Image (cartoon, rainbow over all chains, first blue to last red; front, side, top):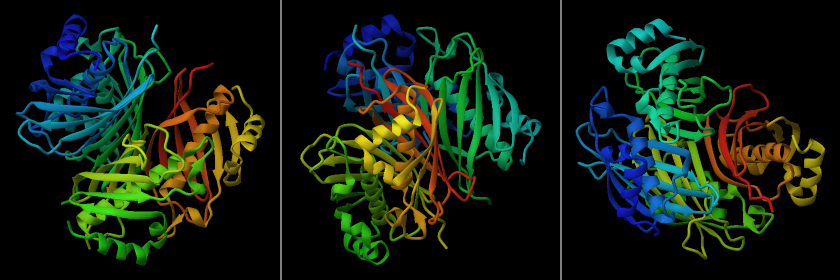
Amino acid sequence: MKSTKAEIIAFLQAEFPQSLEKCDIESVTEKGASIIYHINAADLRPGGTVSGPTMMTAADYALYIAILGEIGIVALAVTTNLSTNFLRKPSADQDIRAVCRLMKVGKALIVGDVWLYSLDSDEPIAHVVGTYSIPPQR
Amino acid sequence: MKSTKAEIIAFLQAEFPQSLEKCDIESVTEKGASIIYHINAADLRPGGTVSGPTMMTAADYALYIAILGEIGIVALAVTTNLSTNFLRKPSADQDIRAVCRLMKVGKALIVGDVWLYSLDSDEPIAHVVGTYSIPPQR
Amino acid sequence: MKSTKAEIIAFLQAEFPQSLEKCDIESVTEKGASIIYHINAADLRPGGTVSGPTMMTAADYALYIAILGEIGIVALAVTTNLSTNFLRKPSADQDIRAVCRLMKVGKALIVGDVWLYSLDSDEPIAHVVGTYSIPPQR
Amino acid sequence: MKSTKAEIIAFLQAEFPQSLEKCDIESVTEKGASIIYHINAADLRPGGTVSGPTMMTAADYALYIAILGEIGIVALAVTTNLSTNFLRKPSADQDIRAVCRLMKVGKALIVGDVWLYSLDSDEPIAHVVGTYSIPPQR
């Protein structure tokens, strides 16, 4: 692990502050991270559920935090692929926990998966696999 | 084709009006649809680009419109899988066109892909493959 | 769990015997299964590695065994989507273990993921997410 | 285009001759390729259909040929992701055509999709999106 939770928060406050209004970083661990994404009215869809893009946002963010923890502060990492399976209807009145584990940390590509949960249930609402491309060191 | 563009717009105005504030339906064709998604400040990311979730929202919407056109007004269709490859950096000051084609229209599952473009370029910014589950007729 | 390992083997011997020449079922558990896929010369690729299609075959098979265990003997279940991330180079002289867990068991769709390993390492060689469609009961 | 069909065939005959026993290269075009994969008994599954892994093999091969055409003879390109949607039941007695188009040709990653057809039909049997990683030039 190259960055701590505190270092990552300091980086995000400087470069990407709006992300911290919506998300709390719970933990940054060896090849993993857990975040809480706060749901508000803009995240909801008719029928009392959370939108798919909100779930994908939370997953992408958890993956980014796990990568920052693992390889250090890399502003330029970009998502190249994100594949989501929507599993169960999220609760409209619950925040979302996104738990990421990195499955491969290569020089050019990092792959991880993310499980998403409404906070009132242990059954996942979605599973996401994502790939980030890491620019060559200069 | 079971629904026209006008019928789909009437349905969305009744059931999902906020979607029409962000999107214009350009066309609904045989097993396809094209929409324009309007970018505003909330869709942008540092570095002068459009967020991944915004691109996935536009793609999911184009797929939904194509499905409504093909099988008729079905409020309960739900996305089960969405897989996105991010191909090029979108222009921050350009709306996005999402062009969907359905590749399979089954009784239970509909699969389609969507090409996304910034309006100032013919090179796609992302490619999305999505699957919708259609509830059994009652 | 609706089928035991012994019941699944009996079914495969009757309907799909060639699968048992290549694979041993290690275990069938609550929403999961583990198999060993035996590598032979036809599975190899230049450079001393195992082919991608061989890995996908092993994953698809583990997913099918887990489904048979979970919902009972259903000859007609079909794969609708299979998404593979290739993580590390497999060992050419090692069999492959495929470990499946089902993440959603719905009436129409079952989704699971599979981790693949060369038997000489604990690092996964590939990760697969697959969806099966289950035909309506008659 | 950096390699012609004849140059690619010469390379495959030297490095990967068994591939040419199963496949004919129909065409290598600007950012695309088309191949024919010959089906034999080992490719079939109970119920008179072609196996999923056979379809994925054909798709991966078409993608590889398109990449060789586009960037030149690169023995070390490796598949990092392959995502397949199975759309229709293939004909057991028909060879398969795989038609690839590259959607992004980057320095490190190449992404393309492949449509698969049984030769007796214009309806696709599967759609595949794949990513190849290209090793840095030495």
